[in-house]
Length: 285
Image 1 (cartoon, rainbow, N blue to C red):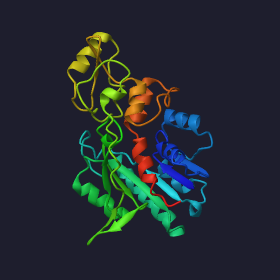
Image 2: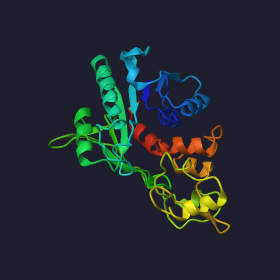
Image 3: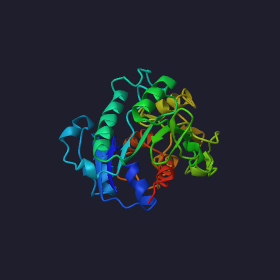
Image 4: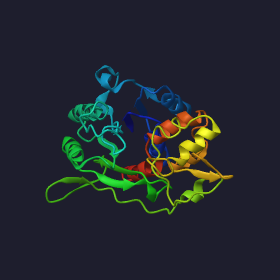
């Protein structure tokens, strides 16, 4: 397959395709975060970096040859954790750039497949706007079925669809519950929850540097927002890099070349690998 991945992040789409045995010919990645690009090229050096998504008309791509386009457009204006500016907010409105690119490819290759992801806390109004723009309504999948993390997300795709009385909907069945619990994935210590709350992009970066400040910070935020913590030696700690990788379904060493802060940023802002593998498993080979 020839693939275009917008807002590529840590390259979950490529890893998922590889994991389920779908051969990738050319993989074009649109990403501007330097350490996201660094991680992508570390694992897949043949990835073709094309840069800023808003400059897509300048990209050197044979659009007619594209088989699959991926988009995890920014969720900050849609999420309950954000300011709720909505789909027309400064960041989340980049969704419409994806729509423009998708429609351009469709005009050349009507059979192109697509996957768009966004937060489960998006308003019904915004979900409706996005669904009408894409011509299909989403499936809602929580990563808790395949990892130890509560991560509720919408997925719009034409990989498999069905028609209802009024609409076309994404027909991806729910993945089988693997019954993975938080206690199973921590490297040490103990937890008082079955599942972690959703990791967010700022999970690690916001933690203070001194031990006293860290403890005060975490005590005030235990299970508040997105801070699920681990208790160890009578102290609280945030998740380490290995645990965060496991919460998103990646191998323990996947982010070894990054600092914990950078890994937390990418994992918190990324896709859950086993969910994407599940969705891609319905691509007709």
